[in-house]
Length: 287
Length: 290
Image (cartoon, rainbow over the protein chains, first blue to last red):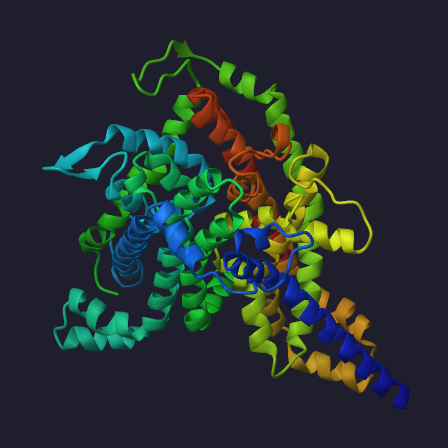
C-alpha cells in the first residue's frame, strides 16, 4: 500500500512536469514572437540569441506601422470580420428557426441537401468562386460593391454557413414546443417569437457562433489573397505575408507585424474562451 | 408544429441564395471546367471537351509529390499528434485546480492565425539566427538548414503541423473523457489498478470513437494544408516544391501557371478523395455506435 502511494506521488510529479513542459512548448512561439518584436536589430541577429530584450523597443511597432499601411489592413480586417459575422448570424438564425419551428414543403429534402454540402471541401470552391467574383462587377458611383477589390467579395461569400445552421438548429430544437404554442395563443407572430423569445433563450449559442465566425474570418488568408489586388483592400494576413517578403531580415519588424495580427485574437480568446472552447468541442463531437 | 406553408422558404431564402451561388454553383462549375480544354478564364473560351486535364494532373510528378506528402502527413503527423494529444488530455483531465489553466494554454494554437504563427516558426527555424538551431548548437550539434534543404523541409513542416494540430485534438479528447462514467475509474481505484493500465483499458477504449474521428479528420485536413506551407516557406511550397500539398497544387495551377482546367481537375480529384474519407468516417461511426 505504501509503495503505491509513493509511486503515485512520483507519477503526479512526472505528470505535472510533462504538462508544464508541453505548456512551455505550446506557448514558446507566442512568447518568442513578442520578445523578438521588442528587440533591436543587433539583438535580433545576435548569436547565440538573447532571450529578453535589454531595452524593449516599442518603436518597432511604430516602424512596422509606418513601413506598410497596417492601419488600413487592420480596418479592412475589422470591417470584413464584423460584416461577415453580422451576415452569418442573420442567415443562421433565420434558417435555424425555419428548420426547428416552421413546417414547409420540401423541408426534409432541403435539410439533407444542405447537410450534404458539408462534405464539399471549401478549398476546391475557391478557384471557381474567384471566377464568379471576377465576372461580377457592381459599382454604385465610385464605390465598388462586388467584384475584385471590393468589400462585397471579401464578405458576401461567407455570410451563410451550413455548419452553423446545423448547430443552431440543434439548439433551437431543444426549446420546448409548449413555449411556442403558448406564444401562438397570445397571438405572437413567428417573426416576433424568433427575435423576442428564441434568440434570447439561446443567447449563448448565438454568441458562440458569432465569436467562432469572427475568429475564422479574422484569420482567413487564401480567399482575401485571391480577390484583392489593390493594397488598400488587403486584410492583415495578406498584408503580413507581403510585409514579410519586403522587410528582408528585419525580423523584429516582421514579428511586430505578426503581433498586430495575433494579439487581438488572443485578447478575445482570453476573455471569451468559455464560449470558444465549448463551441469547438461541440462541433468536434458532432462531426 | 403548424400546418405547412411557404413561409419557411422565405426564412431560408437568404442562406439558400448564398449557398447556391458560392457553394453549389462553383461545385458544378469546377466539374464542367475540369473537362474543358485550354480554358481561358478571362475570355471564357475553350477548345473542346475531354479528359486530358485529368490525364495531365494524374501523370504530373508534382501532384504525385503532393499525394506523397499527404501520405506522410497521414502516417506521421496525424498519429503523432493524436498520441501526444491523448496523453496530454488524460493528464489534464487528472488535474483539478490547474485544469482550466492548462486547457487555456493548450488550446491557444487553434484560435491564432496560421499565417502569423507560421511566420514565427520560420523565424524559429532560421538557420543562422533561429531559436531552434541555437538550442541544437547548445547541445553540441551542427545547425540544420531547416527551410532551405528539401531533406529538412518536410520534418520542419511536420513539427509545426503537430504543434498546431494538437490543440484541436486535446479539446476533442478532453470532451470525450467527460463522457466516461466516473464509477469505472472509482472501481479501478478500489482495485488499485496501475494507472497505465487504467489508461490503456479504460481511457483509450472509452474515447475510441473520438480517436477514429480525429484520425479521419486529420487525414482530410492533411489534403487541405495550405496556409502552413505558404507562411513557413514565405509563399513557396518549400525548397524545390518539396513540401507541396494537394490544395497548394491546385492553387499553383490556378494562380501561378494559369492552367484553369487542370486546377479544376485537381479540385475534382480532391473532392472525391475527401468524399471517400467522409464516407469511411460515417461507416466507422455507425459501426462504433452500435
